[in-house]
Image 1 (tube, rainbow, N blue to C red):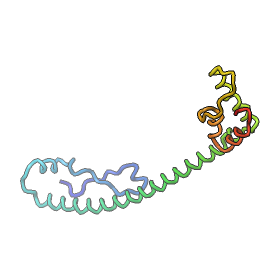
Image 2 (image 1 turned 120 degrees about the vertical axis):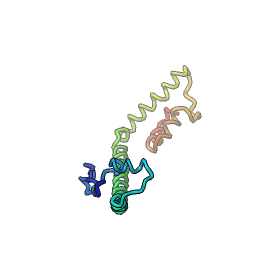
Image 3 (image 1 turned 90 degrees about the horizontal axis):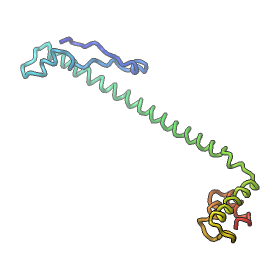
Image 4 (image 1 turned 45 degrees about the horizontal axis):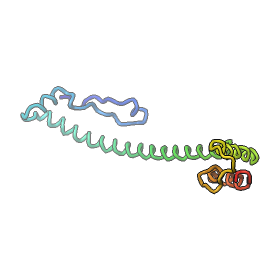
Length: 157
């Protein structure tokens, strides 16, 4: 058994100064043979395995620290992504074209909503403006400006 297996480094880790990650000792034919029997170990095997334990423990600590730092960075990036996404959503909402429709155009659109319902119901009388499910009420519950326009348009009621 070789005292120190040759290191194998991930290309991702090498970009971010990861320590060299050793190959698995389970791939070593000597280790595979030792794992299949209960015979005593040679002294050279004991020394090599103790060195592996020591080095692996140190490397594990280093890797855990690096993982913690990367996790903190990831959390910071995810928080930033959420804030930027919210900024984007808010900006798009504020710039939405519906917000710039003039009141007279809204009144005209609203009148089609009310009259269309009357036509569908084939009523010859004015719509029942007391029914909260009907257009005058529904339109007035969308937003403050629609409420103002809806309530100020007598023909809807």
